[in-house]
Image (tube, rainbow, N blue to C red; front, side, top):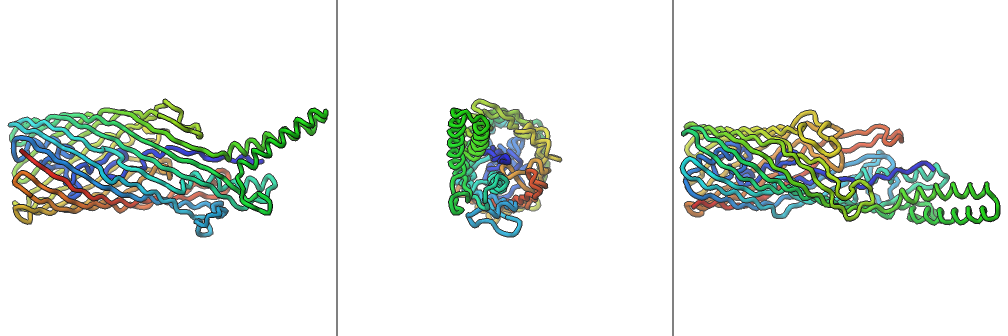
Length: 485
């Protein structure tokens, strides 16, 4: 029988990111960002992350703290087209090309973040804690097309072995989570009345988890074309062939014994390839990100610059179940966080009206990734941001802004197990001065993603094309409090 190569459950690497930013970086760590993403020249408390050198120009000396909570919800939609999918019995396949939609729901109902600073004369010391990467869970209740595509070839392989197989079914499931928790510490010094500098670092702790299965692979090879479990069928066939081989050997019929031994080996091979496969694996790791910043403030202008160095990081498998053989317990995998440069400019058009722009560049090609996926990135991620803020009255302000994110990802990087696409993001919200030193921020932020199409020609030597279309949706709501004393 032609060998049936069933794909194993594979790592769902960066695919659960629910925030704005690069491949492994969340840039929305404060509600002020959701209101207006162009915060790279901020001189308020959210500058702890977005422009730490700007903390030298906080309005007052003393303690400043910002408490934030966000809720993020994302759908990841993959449309996979492969003609053998038409043989699936579940009725989900559409079109003559065998199109199936796999939808993953990713949610993070509560993502906290805290920024704090103490300013005294020319010095400002700051700290921040946030989910700096990842931030959610993605569940695919029907698995993924890359899983099912191998099972879809089963009827064709069985036909070559003489079986009248025309249908298949499979129970496939995948769930992944990814969190990178970051604790940032640093100091800002006001060098002159116009210029300040920041030096700091962020400790990153990675916590990933992957759980999934491929179970109960069936084909219509039973009596009268009934759907039966292929693994059980060929396991029984292998046992019966082995018993027959032993009987013929005992009877001195060497030729028949060899014939049935060969049949037993072939049946056992198919049984092994169609056996249930399960995965339950966690990954952990840590790394340190050095950070430098400069801020220049002159009259109505402010310019902020920040550079975060590449974070060398590996994650270690902590495996409980792995029938795939891909996640051996204790093995380390590269998981670097790419370095990042941000530049922001703000201008006070009127005393009550401010405009800002920003630029982010992520040096993705310099970061080491699992399976050397960085080699399938043509250029680093670029982001372009702009926004405006208006003080409606003494106690209320509104703001809005947008962000364009452009990735340089190629086909070799994109798969249903790990993908992201270029996007436009929009945010708006309001701030309310509840008391002189207490401010409430609320905001809504959503992202419209492009669709990325990938075609794999002559898939697995079948002469058939396999097509994937990737896209997402993303919505974030946030509320926070800023307090100074």
